Image 1 (tube, rainbow, N blue to C red):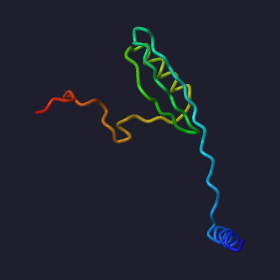
Image 2 (image 1 turned 45 degrees about the vertical axis):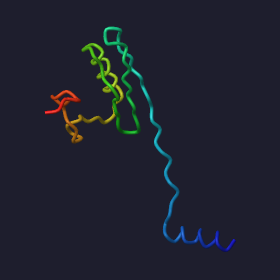
Image 3 (image 1 turned 90 degrees about the horizontal axis):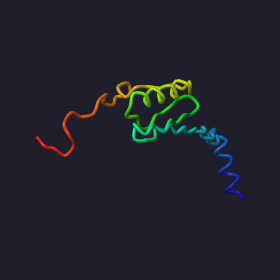
Image 4 (image 1 turned 135 degrees about the vertical axis):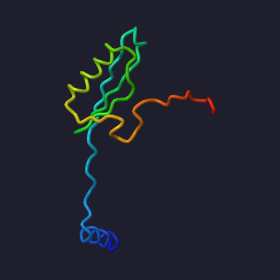
Length: 97
């Protein structure tokens, strides 16, 4: 009992607070057309931001994805703003110089 009281007093003096509950994430799966090989793009949105996983093969499917991202109203950034490469490597994987 003394130990529990001492721990509670120490936490109170140190200003410890319970951890905040994590924000809920929402998933929206956007399935491409048969011409786009029926791939799934997943839009993950939180309280403020959105992340898009995968993309589309056809321009029409890409436009549907863009509209879903815009409709979410969340913050979004491009890969070059995050310090990631804008385009894939020009050299095929597995080939050595």
